[in-house]
Image (cartoon, rainbow, N blue to C red):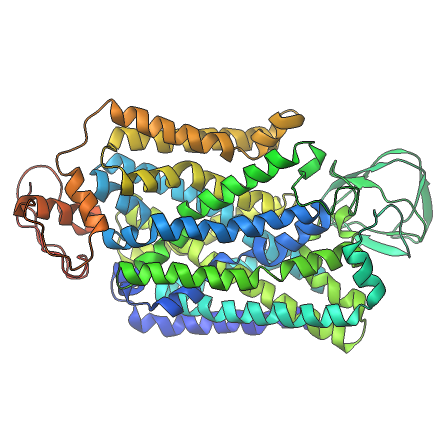
Length: 606
């Protein structure tokens, strides 16, 4: 109960900051990008707090327990993705002047259809990423307090939606920056305590893994989701009534919420078709999920999704629009890489200790809760309770920080890009979107957080990565090419996800590429975008628009650029809601906060 109470201060502080942000909320720009006045240090802390989600705080350690050391490739991909973003995307995106990714797409290519398509893509990525945040919040709270799964889901959804509806991006920035520091402290201190407390025997076993084949002591297991166990030998199990049953070899179904005890010496059943924790190959530095037999291909697939997907995550990209200029955006990305590198040193400690101390979570389908389950296995007194409470608070900070950014971009795509609404519409959309995601998260408990997050990264890699890279660096990109490429990436990844969820069981390299389609979906989207664009002709103002993305904010006009071309470049850098239509007539002056510093306002269309 103390651990559950520890969540309360985090939720209340989040709401308090949201209330304080009301005074700064006057325009759509205030709500979406905090009027572009966030400093690099504060912004990088907020980006790190937003980026370090449930998959980072809990998911990596849980994957390490279940799948082995190769799961650490996720942390490599999560961090390395910022190198690509720093070099290719950060500064040009800030110079574009757009408020959202769909706004950039239309401003660069003057296509309302492309804007609507990218807005739908934002919805897909955001929902896939939001569901595991709310899901893991429900699982963690149920583990530490015994509350039903839905309670944590509803608490997380309510706290995030109210905070964002009140304070917008400015409130989200301060919440996320504070919660990054909170998560770092609440993760590092318990990790040091665990390493010092467990003793030399546990530390030795952590780095010299032994397969989890039998229970060393009476072990209680509460199944958080429906699970079918495979029994290789007669297995004794004590049911809730205290009666010992011996089940013959075969399959044994356990329902969600069922509580049983495996006596000491009982053989460990298999769950989910994977290997037992600590099985041969657990310590190898490759990711062999489900024992598919292609660890190198699986590792490269995960890296392709996480590295390229980071470049296309809409809630991360929007962060660079809050920077005052392109130089500040680059500094934000560089500082973020350092902060992430420090953070990702820690989850490996929890994962290796979790394999020794709480391997039974593999059976219950709740390895994502290994971090918060560790302290009570080491100390049953006040110290274990205290550190469980601290880790629970840190976990909820992770859920809330990431959910704020994701809910912001999903609501922005709906209200700003699809509905063209104002501030009131944005606030209402936040509440409705949160309610929808809560409903979707309720049946999502059986799906691991890392699976859902990787799918979100894969959609981003196959859609926004080619759109941003080619839109920023290739002047021959056309609107039909961009639409074809984004649609190809969205449809292929979505079909692959549906096949992995409900299709027939696949084996070998086919199973790897269906479950993790980034290695083929991303090149296919790039190829389609390039081929279709080459069959058309880019608009006359495309090079001027490209220059606007790459010249400094206060760079003087070059001699070969006419005022008309200069106006086209400036106009192309603004979202559709802040500029006039591209075809016919005269343009109306944009609002003062729409133009980037030093940009001349267009008077006539080219």
